[in-house]
Structures are given as structure tokens and as C-alpha cells.
Amino acid sequence: MAELAGLEDPKVRAVNERHGDDHGVNLGRLRALAKRLRTQQELARQLWGTDDTAARLLAVLVCRPKEFGRDELDAMVREARTPKVHDWLVNYVVKKSPHAEELRLAWSADPDPVVASSGWALTTERVAKRPEGLDLGGLLDTVEAEMKDAPDRLQWAMNHCLARIGIDHAEYRARAIDIGERLEVLKDYPTPPGCTSPFAPVWITELVRRKQG
Image 1 (cartoon, rainbow, N blue to C red):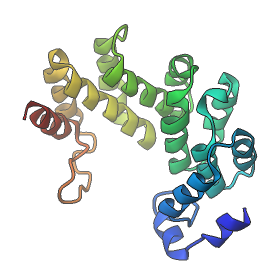
Image 2 (spheres, rainbow, N blue to C red; image 1 turned 180 degrees about the vertical axis):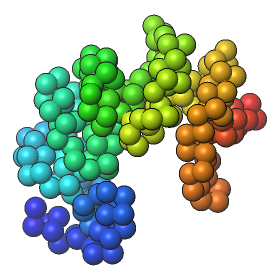
Image 3 (cartoon, rainbow, N blue to C red; image 1 turned 90 degrees about the vertical axis):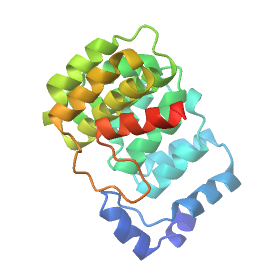
């Protein structure tokens, strides 16, 4: 904890706080520290228990994802207060867990929109890598009905799923683009030069173009 405190940079904190993250540690230096520590599951649990954002990010980097129990991961997602911790926890830990599918199903319908966004993130992973058994048409029905009025983080996760369906599944592409065009979610999102807009119709069209060469 003392070493993490020594890595604190007020300028980094100021930037992060604009995105809802309350830490001031450069992520490159955090990753270097994690590389030095290597995998330490008990240390990861202790770091998570501090409720400190930088410590929790470090915990995600040094843990063994498959050693967390289902209920433990459920509690951790509900405790993840900041966007970066939540994002890293889902992408670096939960997606590698043997409990990922069970949690995907449980979280997708959770009344907490941040927890629900975790379920949608896991669904997006399946859309891209293991779509067998998914009701893609049903997912599009839900997106069409609920995404427009969803809270920000849940809306972002649903939009990502919408785009992934359109990118990876040609038979649903026209419908996915149509839903995106009608709902106009993230249509005016500020996008830096050289980056692809998260507006689903643009995102789908651009990534399909790249895949087709």
C-alpha cells in the first residue's frame, strides 16, 4: 500500500476523476508492479479487501481468476465502485472463470444496472466467441426495447452487444444496423481522429469493411 501511495500522481488522478475513477496511479507503472509481484492469490484477496481503487486494480492483475468462487465474484462485482475496477474485474477475471456462464445468466437480469452491464459484457463475449445456443434474435429484441432508456453503463454494454451481433453475424446485420439507426444511442459520442465511433451502425459497417479487406 505504501508503494502504491508512492506512485500517486495528482495529474493522473485529475484525469481519472473526470471518468469516475478515484486513483492517481499510472497504469503502466501499476502493470510493472504487478509483473514484479507475479501471481499471488492471497495477496490479491487482501488488496481487494482494502477498498482502495489502485489496490483493487493491482489485485485483478496478480490474482488467479479460476480460484474465485461464484459467490465471491458476485460480491466483488457489486463492490466494484469505479468504472475501471469494474471493467478490469469483468474482463480480466470473470471472463476466465468457470462460473462465467452461470454469472452471465444471473447478472443480465439483475436490477442493479452496473451488475446487469456485467452480464451483457459476458454475453457480448459469447456472441463473438461461442454464439452456439444464444438467442441472437431475442437479444436484439431486448436491446431494441430497453437500450434507449438504460443507464449509461448498461446502455454502453447493450450497445456493444448490438454492434458485436451485427459485426459477427451477417444474417442479423441489417436488423442490428436498423436498431442502431432508429435508437440513435451514442450517435453524437465524441470520437478522436483515427478511432471508430461507438455508434452501432458506424461501428458495424467499419469493422465489417476491415474484415472483408
